[in-house]
Image (tube, helix red, strand yellow):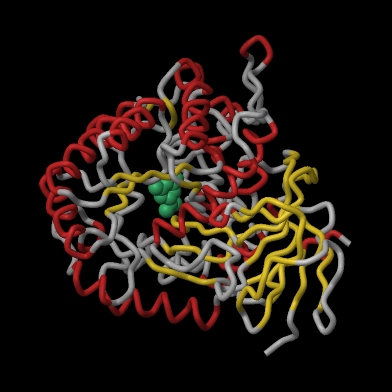
Length: 447
Ligand code: DOR
Protein backbone atom coordinates (compact mmCIF):
# COMPACT_ATOMS: atom_id res chain seq x y z
CA UNK A 1 0.00 0.00 0.00
CA UNK A 2 1.42 3.39 -0.97
CA UNK A 3 1.95 6.33 1.33
CA UNK A 4 -1.06 8.29 2.57
CA UNK A 5 -1.67 11.51 0.66
CA UNK A 6 -2.70 14.97 1.86
CA UNK A 7 -4.14 17.26 -0.79
CA UNK A 8 -3.65 20.58 0.89
CA UNK A 9 -5.04 24.08 0.75
CA UNK A 10 -7.53 23.66 -2.11
CA UNK A 11 -11.15 24.80 -2.32
CA UNK A 12 -12.92 21.51 -1.64
CA UNK A 13 -16.26 21.22 -3.43
CA UNK A 14 -18.14 18.06 -2.51
CA UNK A 15 -21.81 18.64 -3.36
CA UNK A 16 -23.00 15.35 -1.83
CA UNK A 17 -21.88 16.59 1.59
CA UNK A 18 -22.62 20.25 0.98
CA UNK A 19 -18.92 21.05 1.43
CA UNK A 20 -17.47 24.14 -0.22
CA UNK A 21 -14.51 25.44 1.79
CA UNK A 22 -10.74 25.59 1.82
CA UNK A 23 -9.51 22.40 3.49
CA UNK A 24 -7.17 19.42 3.26
CA UNK A 25 -8.28 16.07 1.87
CA UNK A 26 -6.54 13.12 3.50
CA UNK A 27 -6.39 9.80 1.67
CA UNK A 28 -5.21 6.58 3.26
CA UNK A 29 -5.34 2.91 2.25
CA UNK A 30 -7.25 3.70 -0.93
CA UNK A 31 -10.11 5.50 0.80
CA UNK A 32 -10.88 9.02 1.99
CA UNK A 33 -9.74 9.49 5.57
CA UNK A 34 -11.06 13.00 6.15
CA UNK A 35 -11.73 16.47 4.78
CA UNK A 36 -10.16 18.48 7.51
CA UNK A 37 -7.63 20.71 9.07
CA UNK A 38 -5.82 23.93 8.64
CA UNK A 39 -5.40 24.72 4.98
CA UNK A 40 -1.84 24.25 3.88
CA UNK A 41 -0.67 22.21 6.86
CA UNK A 42 0.19 18.73 5.64
CA UNK A 43 -0.07 15.94 8.14
CA UNK A 44 3.16 14.27 9.12
CA UNK A 45 3.93 11.11 7.19
CA UNK A 46 1.65 12.11 4.31
CA UNK A 47 2.82 12.82 0.82
CA UNK A 48 1.63 16.33 0.00
CA UNK A 49 -0.15 17.49 -3.13
CA UNK A 50 -0.35 21.28 -2.99
CA UNK A 51 -3.76 22.37 -4.24
CA UNK A 52 -3.66 26.00 -3.13
CA UNK A 53 -5.52 28.18 -5.60
CA UNK A 54 -7.15 25.06 -7.08
CA UNK A 55 -10.44 23.20 -6.67
CA UNK A 56 -10.53 19.70 -5.16
CA UNK A 57 -13.56 17.56 -5.97
CA UNK A 58 -14.63 13.91 -6.09
CA UNK A 59 -13.40 12.17 -9.25
CA UNK A 60 -15.84 12.59 -12.12
CA UNK A 61 -18.21 9.77 -13.10
CA UNK A 62 -19.12 9.20 -16.75
CA UNK A 63 -22.15 7.00 -17.38
CA UNK A 64 -21.62 7.00 -21.17
CA UNK A 65 -18.19 6.09 -22.58
CA UNK A 66 -17.33 4.22 -25.76
CA UNK A 67 -14.27 2.09 -25.02
CA UNK A 68 -14.50 0.06 -28.27
CA UNK A 69 -13.11 -3.14 -26.81
CA UNK A 70 -13.74 -5.92 -27.79
CA UNK A 71 -13.56 -5.68 -31.53
CA UNK A 72 -12.72 -2.08 -32.39
CA UNK A 73 -9.31 -1.78 -30.75
CA UNK A 74 -8.02 0.36 -33.62
CA UNK A 75 -10.33 3.13 -32.29
CA UNK A 76 -9.75 2.70 -28.54
CA UNK A 77 -8.96 0.08 -25.93
CA UNK A 78 -9.82 -0.21 -22.28
CA UNK A 79 -6.19 0.72 -21.52
CA UNK A 80 -6.14 3.87 -23.69
CA UNK A 81 -9.73 4.89 -22.91
CA UNK A 82 -9.22 4.70 -19.15
CA UNK A 83 -5.93 6.60 -19.42
CA UNK A 84 -7.77 9.29 -21.39
CA UNK A 85 -10.52 9.27 -18.75
CA UNK A 86 -7.93 9.89 -16.03
CA UNK A 87 -6.62 12.87 -18.02
CA UNK A 88 -10.18 14.17 -18.12
CA UNK A 89 -10.62 13.84 -14.36
CA UNK A 90 -12.88 10.77 -14.54
CA UNK A 91 -12.37 7.97 -12.05
CA UNK A 92 -15.42 5.89 -12.96
CA UNK A 93 -16.63 5.28 -16.51
CA UNK A 94 -19.37 3.09 -17.97
CA UNK A 95 -18.55 1.18 -21.16
CA UNK A 96 -21.24 1.37 -23.83
CA UNK A 97 -22.17 -1.91 -25.53
CA UNK A 98 -21.69 -1.04 -29.22
CA UNK A 99 -18.61 -3.21 -29.35
CA UNK A 100 -18.01 -6.19 -31.67
CA UNK A 101 -19.42 -8.48 -30.49
CA UNK A 102 -21.96 -6.31 -28.72
CA UNK A 103 -22.08 -6.44 -24.93
CA UNK A 104 -25.33 -8.38 -25.11
CA UNK A 105 -24.33 -11.46 -23.09
CA UNK A 106 -22.79 -12.19 -19.70
CA UNK A 107 -19.45 -13.47 -21.00
CA UNK A 108 -18.75 -10.29 -23.00
CA UNK A 109 -19.72 -8.17 -20.01
CA UNK A 110 -17.43 -10.21 -17.76
CA UNK A 111 -14.63 -9.83 -20.34
CA UNK A 112 -14.97 -6.03 -20.37
CA UNK A 113 -15.12 -5.83 -16.57
CA UNK A 114 -12.01 -8.05 -16.32
CA UNK A 115 -10.16 -5.86 -18.85
CA UNK A 116 -11.15 -2.88 -16.73
CA UNK A 117 -9.71 -4.44 -13.59
CA UNK A 118 -6.53 -5.66 -15.28
CA UNK A 119 -5.77 -2.86 -17.74
CA UNK A 120 -7.84 0.10 -16.62
CA UNK A 121 -6.31 2.94 -14.64
CA UNK A 122 -9.78 3.98 -13.41
CA UNK A 123 -12.94 2.05 -12.51
CA UNK A 124 -14.75 0.49 -15.46
CA UNK A 125 -18.42 -0.41 -15.21
CA UNK A 126 -20.40 -1.92 -18.08
CA UNK A 127 -23.71 -1.29 -19.78
CA UNK A 128 -25.51 -4.18 -21.45
CA UNK A 129 -27.31 -4.01 -24.78
CA UNK A 130 -31.12 -3.86 -24.75
CA UNK A 131 -31.49 -6.13 -27.77
CA UNK A 132 -29.51 -9.07 -29.12
CA UNK A 133 -26.71 -7.75 -31.35
CA UNK A 134 -28.24 -4.28 -30.84
CA UNK A 135 -30.41 -5.24 -33.79
CA UNK A 136 -33.61 -3.94 -32.22
CA UNK A 137 -35.54 -7.20 -32.63
CA UNK A 138 -35.22 -9.39 -29.53
CA UNK A 139 -34.55 -8.44 -25.92
CA UNK A 140 -31.34 -9.69 -24.32
CA UNK A 141 -31.49 -11.93 -21.24
CA UNK A 142 -31.90 -8.96 -18.95
CA UNK A 143 -31.84 -10.83 -15.65
CA UNK A 144 -28.67 -12.70 -16.65
CA UNK A 145 -26.94 -9.46 -17.67
CA UNK A 146 -28.09 -7.81 -14.45
CA UNK A 147 -26.46 -10.68 -12.53
CA UNK A 148 -23.23 -10.15 -14.48
CA UNK A 149 -23.07 -6.63 -13.06
CA UNK A 150 -24.32 -4.25 -15.76
CA UNK A 151 -25.43 -0.85 -14.50
CA UNK A 152 -28.13 -0.44 -17.15
CA UNK A 153 -29.14 -1.33 -20.68
CA UNK A 154 -28.67 0.59 -23.92
CA UNK A 155 -28.48 0.02 -27.67
CA UNK A 156 -26.67 3.36 -27.91
CA UNK A 157 -25.61 4.33 -31.38
CA UNK A 158 -29.07 3.06 -32.31
CA UNK A 159 -32.44 3.70 -30.69
CA UNK A 160 -34.80 1.03 -29.45
CA UNK A 161 -37.07 2.01 -32.32
CA UNK A 162 -39.86 -0.56 -31.85
CA UNK A 163 -42.22 0.97 -29.28
CA UNK A 164 -43.47 -2.36 -27.97
CA UNK A 165 -39.92 -3.65 -27.48
CA UNK A 166 -39.15 -0.48 -25.55
CA UNK A 167 -42.28 -1.07 -23.50
CA UNK A 168 -41.10 -4.60 -22.69
CA UNK A 169 -37.58 -3.40 -21.84
CA UNK A 170 -39.03 -0.80 -19.45
CA UNK A 171 -41.26 -3.47 -17.91
CA UNK A 172 -38.17 -5.61 -17.22
CA UNK A 173 -36.36 -2.59 -15.82
CA UNK A 174 -38.93 -2.59 -13.02
CA UNK A 175 -37.77 -6.09 -12.11
CA UNK A 176 -34.01 -5.53 -12.45
CA UNK A 177 -34.17 -2.01 -11.04
CA UNK A 178 -31.76 -0.94 -13.79
CA UNK A 179 -32.41 1.91 -16.24
CA UNK A 180 -33.11 1.62 -19.95
CA UNK A 181 -30.78 4.22 -21.48
CA UNK A 182 -32.28 5.12 -24.82
CA UNK A 183 -30.60 6.85 -27.75
CA UNK A 184 -33.71 8.79 -28.66
CA UNK A 185 -33.77 9.25 -32.42
CA UNK A 186 -36.78 8.30 -34.50
CA UNK A 187 -35.11 6.69 -37.57
CA UNK A 188 -37.97 7.39 -39.93
CA UNK A 189 -37.61 11.11 -39.20
CA UNK A 190 -33.80 11.25 -38.97
CA UNK A 191 -33.45 9.41 -42.27
CA UNK A 192 -30.03 9.99 -43.80
CA UNK A 193 -29.65 13.39 -42.16
CA UNK A 194 -26.07 14.48 -41.63
CA UNK A 195 -26.42 17.48 -39.32
CA UNK A 196 -29.01 19.68 -37.65
CA UNK A 197 -31.73 20.68 -40.11
CA UNK A 198 -31.79 24.40 -40.83
CA UNK A 199 -30.20 27.24 -42.73
CA UNK A 200 -26.63 26.04 -42.18
CA UNK A 201 -27.41 22.52 -43.45
CA UNK A 202 -29.11 24.05 -46.49
CA UNK A 203 -26.17 26.37 -47.09
CA UNK A 204 -23.75 23.44 -46.92
CA UNK A 205 -26.00 21.21 -49.01
CA UNK A 206 -26.15 18.58 -46.29
CA UNK A 207 -29.37 16.76 -45.48
CA UNK A 208 -30.75 17.82 -42.13
CA UNK A 209 -32.12 16.05 -39.07
CA UNK A 210 -34.95 17.96 -37.39
CA UNK A 211 -34.86 18.28 -33.61
CA UNK A 212 -38.15 16.41 -33.50
CA UNK A 213 -36.37 13.17 -34.48
CA UNK A 214 -35.16 13.25 -30.88
CA UNK A 215 -38.06 14.80 -29.03
CA UNK A 216 -40.80 12.57 -30.43
CA UNK A 217 -38.96 9.55 -29.09
CA UNK A 218 -38.29 11.23 -25.76
CA UNK A 219 -42.05 11.88 -25.49
CA UNK A 220 -42.81 8.29 -26.53
CA UNK A 221 -40.41 6.86 -23.97
CA UNK A 222 -41.80 9.04 -21.20
CA UNK A 223 -45.29 7.75 -22.02
CA UNK A 224 -43.99 4.17 -21.92
CA UNK A 225 -42.16 4.79 -18.63
CA UNK A 226 -45.46 6.00 -17.21
CA UNK A 227 -47.32 2.99 -18.60
CA UNK A 228 -44.87 0.43 -17.24
CA UNK A 229 -43.49 2.14 -14.14
CA UNK A 230 -40.06 1.42 -15.62
CA UNK A 231 -36.88 3.40 -15.24
CA UNK A 232 -36.00 5.54 -18.27
CA UNK A 233 -32.73 7.38 -18.82
CA UNK A 234 -32.48 9.66 -21.85
CA UNK A 235 -28.99 9.51 -23.35
CA UNK A 236 -27.29 12.63 -24.78
CA UNK A 237 -30.37 14.86 -24.60
CA UNK A 238 -29.84 17.80 -26.93
CA UNK A 239 -32.94 19.83 -27.82
CA UNK A 240 -35.19 22.39 -26.13
CA UNK A 241 -38.30 20.26 -26.66
CA UNK A 242 -36.61 17.25 -25.08
CA UNK A 243 -35.62 19.32 -22.05
CA UNK A 244 -39.22 20.52 -21.71
CA UNK A 245 -40.56 16.97 -22.02
CA UNK A 246 -38.23 15.66 -19.29
CA UNK A 247 -39.08 18.64 -17.08
CA UNK A 248 -42.79 17.84 -17.35
CA UNK A 249 -42.14 14.13 -16.71
CA UNK A 250 -40.21 14.94 -13.55
CA UNK A 251 -42.93 17.31 -12.36
CA UNK A 252 -45.30 14.36 -12.65
CA UNK A 253 -42.99 12.19 -10.58
CA UNK A 254 -42.03 9.70 -13.28
CA UNK A 255 -38.83 7.65 -13.05
CA UNK A 256 -37.03 9.58 -15.74
CA UNK A 257 -33.44 10.84 -15.72
CA UNK A 258 -31.36 12.47 -18.44
CA UNK A 259 -27.81 13.31 -19.38
CA UNK A 260 -26.21 15.91 -21.67
CA UNK A 261 -22.80 15.89 -23.33
CA UNK A 262 -20.01 18.46 -23.05
CA UNK A 263 -20.43 19.36 -26.73
CA UNK A 264 -24.16 19.93 -26.49
CA UNK A 265 -23.60 22.48 -23.70
CA UNK A 266 -20.82 24.35 -25.44
CA UNK A 267 -20.82 24.29 -29.27
CA UNK A 268 -23.39 24.67 -32.03
CA UNK A 269 -24.18 23.58 -35.58
CA UNK A 270 -22.15 26.58 -36.79
CA UNK A 271 -19.01 24.57 -35.97
CA UNK A 272 -19.64 22.50 -39.12
CA UNK A 273 -18.26 25.52 -41.00
CA UNK A 274 -14.90 24.67 -39.41
CA UNK A 275 -14.36 28.20 -38.10
CA UNK A 276 -14.56 27.56 -34.37
CA UNK A 277 -18.23 28.46 -34.25
CA UNK A 278 -17.96 31.63 -36.35
CA UNK A 279 -20.06 32.16 -39.46
CA UNK A 280 -18.20 32.52 -42.75
CA UNK A 281 -17.66 36.09 -43.97
CA UNK A 282 -20.27 37.00 -46.59
CA UNK A 283 -21.35 33.37 -46.52
CA UNK A 284 -18.24 32.27 -48.41
CA UNK A 285 -17.25 28.73 -47.47
CA UNK A 286 -13.59 28.04 -46.69
CA UNK A 287 -11.63 24.82 -47.06
CA UNK A 288 -12.29 24.24 -43.35
CA UNK A 289 -16.02 23.72 -43.93
CA UNK A 290 -17.52 20.24 -43.61
CA UNK A 291 -15.29 19.50 -40.62
CA UNK A 292 -16.08 15.80 -40.18
CA UNK A 293 -15.01 16.04 -36.54
CA UNK A 294 -18.24 17.95 -35.94
CA UNK A 295 -20.33 15.00 -37.15
CA UNK A 296 -21.96 13.49 -34.12
CA UNK A 297 -25.21 11.88 -33.15
CA UNK A 298 -27.30 13.64 -31.96
CA UNK A 299 -26.02 16.46 -34.15
CA UNK A 300 -24.66 19.75 -32.87
CA UNK A 301 -27.76 21.88 -32.36
CA UNK A 302 -28.79 25.53 -32.47
CA UNK A 303 -27.75 28.12 -29.90
CA UNK A 304 -31.32 28.04 -28.57
CA UNK A 305 -31.00 24.30 -27.94
CA UNK A 306 -27.62 24.77 -26.22
CA UNK A 307 -29.17 27.45 -23.99
CA UNK A 308 -32.09 25.14 -23.12
CA UNK A 309 -29.77 22.24 -22.29
CA UNK A 310 -27.68 24.47 -20.03
CA UNK A 311 -30.86 25.75 -18.33
CA UNK A 312 -31.94 22.14 -17.88
CA UNK A 313 -28.62 21.26 -16.28
CA UNK A 314 -28.77 24.29 -14.02
CA UNK A 315 -32.29 23.55 -12.74
CA UNK A 316 -31.68 19.79 -12.42
CA UNK A 317 -34.01 18.72 -15.24
CA UNK A 318 -30.93 17.18 -16.81
CA UNK A 319 -29.41 15.17 -14.02
CA UNK A 320 -25.87 14.78 -15.20
CA UNK A 321 -23.11 15.37 -17.72
CA UNK A 322 -22.13 12.23 -19.64
CA UNK A 323 -19.41 12.45 -22.26
CA UNK A 324 -20.52 10.09 -25.05
CA UNK A 325 -16.74 9.89 -25.64
CA UNK A 326 -16.73 8.40 -29.15
CA UNK A 327 -13.18 7.80 -30.39
CA UNK A 328 -12.74 6.98 -34.06
CA UNK A 329 -9.77 6.15 -36.27
CA UNK A 330 -8.42 8.83 -38.61
CA UNK A 331 -9.75 6.97 -41.66
CA UNK A 332 -13.26 7.14 -40.20
CA UNK A 333 -13.10 10.94 -40.40
CA UNK A 334 -10.80 11.62 -43.37
CA UNK A 335 -13.58 11.30 -45.90
CA UNK A 336 -16.67 13.18 -46.99
CA UNK A 337 -19.12 14.44 -44.40
CA UNK A 338 -21.64 11.86 -45.61
CA UNK A 339 -19.21 8.99 -45.20
CA UNK A 340 -17.75 10.06 -41.85
CA UNK A 341 -18.49 8.19 -38.64
CA UNK A 342 -20.50 9.93 -35.93
CA UNK A 343 -18.73 10.89 -32.75
CA UNK A 344 -16.36 13.16 -30.86
CA UNK A 345 -13.39 12.05 -28.77
CA UNK A 346 -14.03 14.30 -25.81
CA UNK A 347 -13.28 12.71 -22.48
CA UNK A 348 -10.05 14.74 -22.19
CA UNK A 349 -11.74 18.03 -23.06
CA UNK A 350 -15.00 17.43 -21.16
CA UNK A 351 -14.26 19.62 -18.16
CA UNK A 352 -12.98 22.52 -20.29
CA UNK A 353 -16.07 22.33 -22.52
CA UNK A 354 -18.43 22.18 -19.55
CA UNK A 355 -16.75 25.27 -18.13
CA UNK A 356 -17.98 27.30 -21.13
CA UNK A 357 -21.45 27.86 -19.59
CA UNK A 358 -19.85 28.30 -16.16
CA UNK A 359 -17.61 31.13 -17.39
CA UNK A 360 -20.61 32.57 -19.25
CA UNK A 361 -22.48 32.76 -15.93
CA UNK A 362 -25.30 30.38 -16.86
CA UNK A 363 -24.22 27.41 -14.70
CA UNK A 364 -22.45 27.46 -11.34
CA UNK A 365 -19.23 25.55 -10.78
CA UNK A 366 -20.82 23.85 -7.76
CA UNK A 367 -23.75 22.64 -9.88
CA UNK A 368 -21.43 21.47 -12.65
CA UNK A 369 -19.43 19.41 -10.16
CA UNK A 370 -22.67 18.00 -8.71
CA UNK A 371 -23.75 16.93 -12.20
CA UNK A 372 -20.40 15.16 -12.72
CA UNK A 373 -20.09 13.48 -9.30
CA UNK A 374 -23.01 13.17 -6.89
CA UNK A 375 -25.73 12.95 -9.56
CA UNK A 376 -24.20 10.08 -11.59
CA UNK A 377 -23.35 8.30 -8.30
CA UNK A 378 -27.03 8.49 -7.30
CA UNK A 379 -27.98 7.19 -10.74
CA UNK A 380 -25.61 4.24 -10.29
CA UNK A 381 -26.74 3.70 -6.69
CA UNK A 382 -23.11 3.29 -5.66
CA UNK A 383 -20.96 4.64 -2.84
CA UNK A 384 -19.03 6.95 -5.17
CA UNK A 385 -18.92 10.60 -6.13
CA UNK A 386 -18.20 12.09 -2.71
CA UNK A 387 -15.29 12.60 -0.32
CA UNK A 388 -17.05 11.04 2.68
CA UNK A 389 -14.67 9.16 4.99
CA UNK A 390 -14.38 5.52 3.95
CA UNK A 391 -15.41 6.16 0.34
CA UNK A 392 -12.96 5.35 -2.47
CA UNK A 393 -10.12 7.88 -2.66
CA UNK A 394 -11.17 9.06 -6.13
CA UNK A 395 -10.31 12.72 -6.38
CA UNK A 396 -9.75 15.37 -9.02
CA UNK A 397 -7.79 18.60 -8.66
CA UNK A 398 -9.01 21.28 -11.05
CA UNK A 399 -7.91 24.69 -12.20
CA UNK A 400 -11.16 26.32 -13.37
CA UNK A 401 -9.33 29.34 -14.79
CA UNK A 402 -6.33 27.75 -16.52
CA UNK A 403 -6.34 28.29 -20.27
CA UNK A 404 -5.00 25.60 -22.56
CA UNK A 405 -5.10 24.89 -26.25
CA UNK A 406 -6.52 21.58 -27.39
CA UNK A 407 -3.96 19.47 -29.23
CA UNK A 408 -5.43 16.09 -30.17
CA UNK A 409 -1.97 14.69 -30.95
CA UNK A 410 -1.35 14.93 -27.20
CA UNK A 411 -4.53 12.97 -26.32
CA UNK A 412 -4.10 9.70 -24.48
CA UNK A 413 -7.16 8.48 -26.37
CA UNK A 414 -6.54 6.81 -29.71
CA UNK A 415 -9.38 8.95 -31.02
CA UNK A 416 -8.00 12.29 -32.24
CA UNK A 417 -11.43 13.24 -33.61
CA UNK A 418 -12.26 16.55 -32.01
CA UNK A 419 -13.57 19.75 -33.59
CA UNK A 420 -11.79 21.61 -30.75
CA UNK A 421 -8.28 21.17 -32.14
CA UNK A 422 -6.50 24.52 -31.73
CA UNK A 423 -9.30 25.92 -29.55
CA UNK A 424 -8.43 27.48 -26.22
CA UNK A 425 -10.45 26.12 -23.31
CA UNK A 426 -10.59 27.72 -19.87
CA UNK A 427 -10.68 25.02 -17.21
CA UNK A 428 -8.16 22.25 -16.76
CA UNK A 429 -7.75 18.98 -14.91
CA UNK A 430 -4.52 19.18 -12.93
CA UNK A 431 -4.33 15.90 -11.01
CA UNK A 432 -6.51 12.78 -10.89
CA UNK A 433 -6.30 10.18 -8.15
CA UNK A 434 -7.99 6.81 -8.31
CA UNK A 435 -8.19 4.65 -5.18
CA UNK A 436 -5.57 6.89 -3.59
CA UNK A 437 -3.03 6.66 -6.42
CA UNK A 438 -2.14 9.48 -8.83
CA UNK A 439 -3.28 8.34 -12.28
CA UNK A 440 -2.86 11.68 -14.05
CA UNK A 441 -0.71 14.71 -13.33
CA UNK A 442 -0.88 17.56 -15.83
CA UNK A 443 1.84 19.55 -14.09
CA UNK A 444 4.36 16.81 -14.92
CA UNK A 445 3.31 16.93 -18.59
CA UNK A 446 3.09 20.69 -18.90
CA UNK A 447 6.51 21.07 -17.24
O1 DOR B 1 -21.93 10.29 -32.28
C1 DOR B 1 -22.13 9.21 -31.76
N1 DOR B 1 -21.17 8.27 -31.72
N2 DOR B 1 -23.33 8.96 -31.20
C2 DOR B 1 -23.66 7.74 -30.75
O2 DOR B 1 -24.74 7.57 -30.27
C3 DOR B 1 -22.70 6.62 -30.87
C4 DOR B 1 -21.32 7.11 -30.93
C5 DOR B 1 -20.32 6.05 -31.36
O3 DOR B 1 -20.38 4.93 -30.87
O4 DOR B 1 -19.43 6.37 -32.17
